Length: 202
Image (cartoon, rainbow, N blue to C red; front, side, top):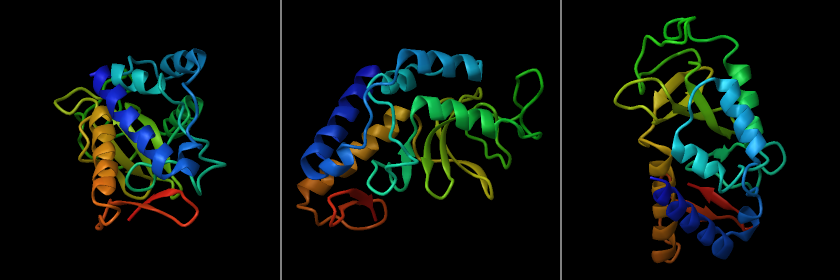
């Protein structure tokens, strides 16, 4: 699994350095071990190995400073620094989803099930400028570790990505196809390069 994380992230960063260096420059170096440890302690549950490995390769982007040129996943989600993951989780978990979260830490819904409120088993990993969150779903079930899309007005819904590795691999593939197609790829979720040299998504 971690080998897949490494290979996919290397493909993404290599593409960015060649085709969108202004966006590549927004990626932060590996997350400090103390931030990772503090985040694990705060959420009170084991975090998936692929998430920990990804954080060992990068510490997100400064979503409050670099959002105009920052690296995003299709289509608008910027990876959060680990310290911001902890802050977002603490803020969103203040009012847990009463239809899912139990005081004893158990959950009435399974991984991948839609929720309206914020489930405390969702670990935010990316944030959009519109307030949307991509989160890993750590509830038990067949879809444990899948990526969920959450917004305050719409709740949480499962994305096509079954894991962080799947999200990275899909993103790397979209970038590779863009290069192979001589920048002629079109359609929703296709990468594009703006006039300022930043990566964006159609």
